[in-house]
Image (cartoon, rainbow, N blue to C red):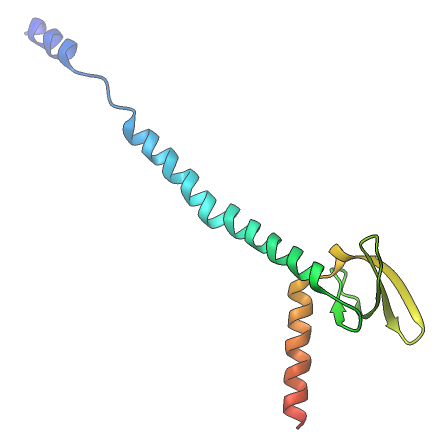
Length: 115
């Protein structure tokens, strides 16, 4: 009886590593499509937005400061007017695309509602 059991155990093959490999590849693919790719897309859109801003536009910074761009400097900074006669110099990357777009939608909606 034990001889048959030993023969069966010797003939049994070790489990395949293929399912584990497929699960790992699947996890990496899911992580790429749900985390890495959207983040790089957002960063690309933010960069395009910050390069496209010009003087006279109303913006909101990442710190929540509402301002109007007075001048675009050559060194990648912006001179913004926070209130009448009060100016600040900020970096282009400090302008928040999401907050600025939300501010624009809010002000456009208020302008349409008042008409």
